[in-house]
Image (cartoon, rainbow, N blue to C red):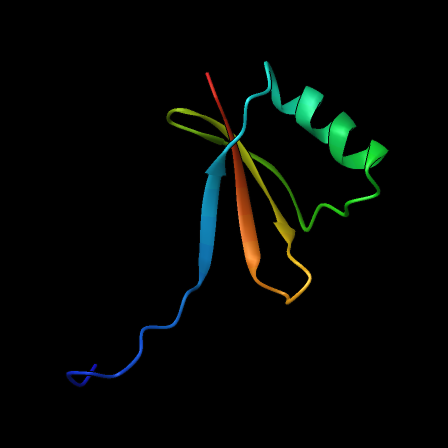
Length: 64
């Protein structure tokens, strides 16, 4: 990448304050927020992806 060129954001990650990934999924369903990818296990918890209104991928992480 050349100097001064803008960096492209692939996604951002938010640590969520839920006890389990299933609790987060239930809250997303209640809020009518679509889940873009199934939950995946991470070394420090579990995560899934949603999209913001502009289409940016947002990773939601529930730590163990």
